Length: 334
Image (tube, rainbow, N blue to C red; front, side, top):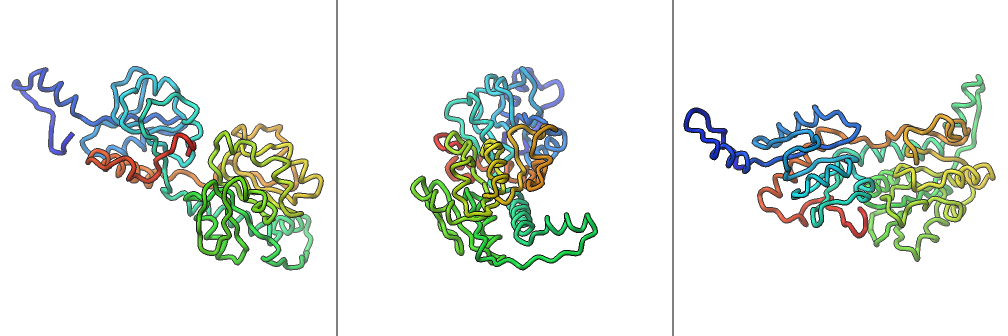
């Protein structure tokens, strides 16, 4: 709907003319599970003046654009006339399990403030392990003044699995701390200061060259359970695992077995197969596993609204979908 059009008022407003204007109005449907809708709706309405932005309810009017997070299948069954679907996160694995309207592009957040958060989290986890701060914390809790021999960065190469927007930012951040940094991705990438590997033919070389492993892969049928016994056992002795991608990348019992055997030194885990992590899960009490509640990189509402609104405006102005950042390839699943 062009800006400046207003609902007609008074006796000259026929039902027919009002319906025409209502039809021309751009509609945006917000359907995000476990998300407080009102702040998003207010921000989206401010960013998209002249558009009708509403929280979805069963039987709602047809929308032009959808903004979603873990929506029910019913949403897409009813909203079959969408022009584009915007996901308020970087991971789209939950969406890929649903029957989506054929030919409708899915667009994920390509950053929106998450990459710097992820770099902070991963660098903290790597440095905490490398500097043995967990050991110092345990000693201090017992009133013990301790000393540990400094480690060499060269002995702790960090491998980053997944070199998308987040993985690339994490890799570049780790280089600044003088760690040898390696990266692996499905297709070939080039990042200054990072030794890059790609494809199935090079994954074993990548793993064997890594002592600390950071998982930032998208979750697809090919990457589910990729952190299992035969892959994790290829890490250098004393290896350390940091998973900030998806819980289903990791086979929990294989990780515990490799830590208990001494091949792995421990892990920092931010994502889990079942969230919240069940109270009886052994990760909670394992002395060499650090657990955080899926907080490595949170969606920042203002940045996300600005990004999504700009992309909707671009589409409304005739921009080709291919020019948008974050468009998902359905064949790859990310």
